[in-house]
Length: 248
Image (cartoon, rainbow, N blue to C red; front, side, top):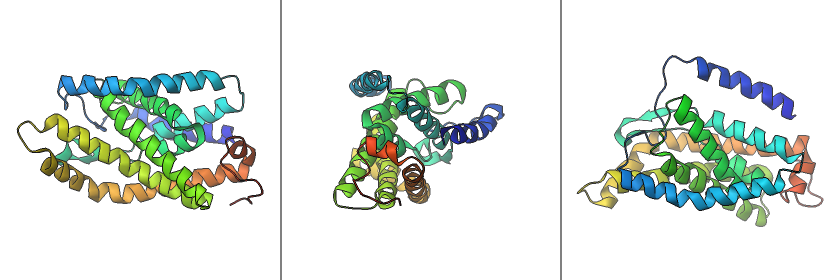
């Protein structure tokens, strides 16, 4: 299964490196004042440190390494689909962090998001290095933890994998853009009042992020169900498949 996904991932990634133009996405370089940029970097460090610690603990489990690589590739590819939102000074795009949070845990998902964002900033001109901390907080922390807790909550209520996966992806996407709107409002408001500016940026995201959130929910549900059908042992080892639960 992992080999098939690797071939598919390479096929999707190839056009990105041959593209002649790159479109800035996430929060673009230079949008945030340096003070805010440094603050978001500092806030992301504890999440990244614990995520790296967790990766090191599980690195000896051979079955977990392909899962980590697959999840990282999915997040990178899914988050490379920018739709410009000029009013907000950034772009809309699906994130994929709900998938990595469900399969790897939210802290590892933050590291995965950070790596994807770093590669995109360095090689695709998406986002930026000065705003990497802010983008990690919004996409990595808000998206991962939001999607993870929604998934766990719905599963605790007895929801099917597909339903829990759908709402995890939906909420992770919307949580990411709520956090992005919050960061932008704090960073660029100047003398403007915070809440009116926050509301305007949120409204600017709605035309693209409403359908993209639904799309990401469907993608997340599809991936979780696929893994449950092809490799239910993985979900059982992660505690995501209940004893005696039939395949979706």
